[in-house]
Image (tube, rainbow over all chains, first blue to last red; front, side, top):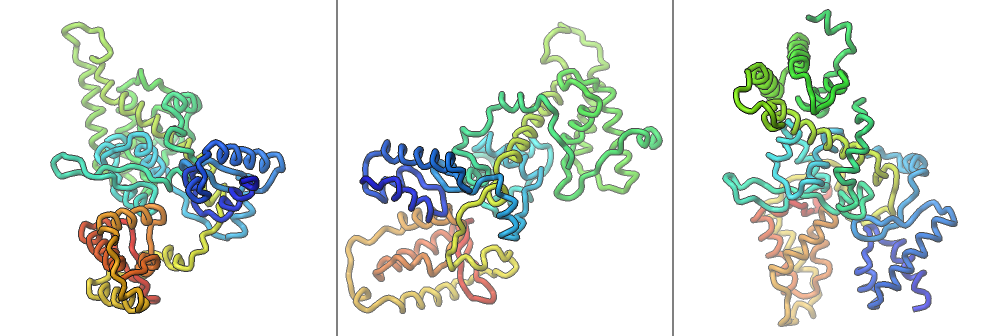
Length: 180
Length: 245
């Protein structure tokens, strides 16, 4: 396929979730992962060098066209929606789940020192976390984990893309800003 | 005591969703006093912590149980610090303060992790993707007040509507290789995982044969029974929508 680049670009253009190489492979009925990967890299470089309004992001195990963060303010004006941003408490709860999953509610609450029932329900509703199952303990407590949506929301390639505890330590050299 | 507090920077009280809990207060005190968390002057911290609780009481703020538990822990550590250590005084594990240091260190790490999430390019705020212009998304975000639980009878009515729409030639077809209920369940679970919710109607769209439709319906019933999904109906439009657990 000599127009592979354009075809892949068209797929990226219409897709509303991140496209994995596997998905592209199935759609195009070709086996050559490397060719697809190369085309994706070329596209990413082209958008970069041409200073396009969007870029090719690697999120949630796939690829997705996203607008550049520096133009966020204009798009927010266009859409006139103010999405409810997550509270600090919600972000902390998400962070515990992201790092410690599979994790029980009691573990999260132990770490944060407060009840998290309401926040967990909200995170479940927003599809940022999900129930992975139940643990074989008295009361069969629910086990939580993060979702693909979580990766998409925070622009993460995969869970390994989160900073390591060591990186966090370095980040924390300056005290966390608790101006809330 | 109140005067003593007044000449310091005022404490900020977080209420409701923003109420951060006893760990946050400890972090605040450690930070304010510029302390090393591995060498906390427990007497000072305990004193300030209790002053804070008193102030909260004076301001008529309900003190959550967790705050009292932490106060008890601090006082307990303080009292253990006062006791002379009989046998081998060395060893980090013997330091009663470890009871608070370890969770505090973990909590700090957690705060940094949350901080890091904030700094990322958030979808629908910093970065945007193409809009989903699916016609069946119209009421999803309207809030759950407009949605009511669907009874089994209403579900059967909706199912009959769908059966009616099947074209007669498909209706007569007898297919052997119909999909099993079990694999249909996992397909539906995948759809819900990806989209969060889907209309009842939509789940039947790709099904051509009567057999497939029945399998899909059984799968939905089975999932509802094991509470993997919630089936809701929009009050004004009457559209039945299936939600993730």
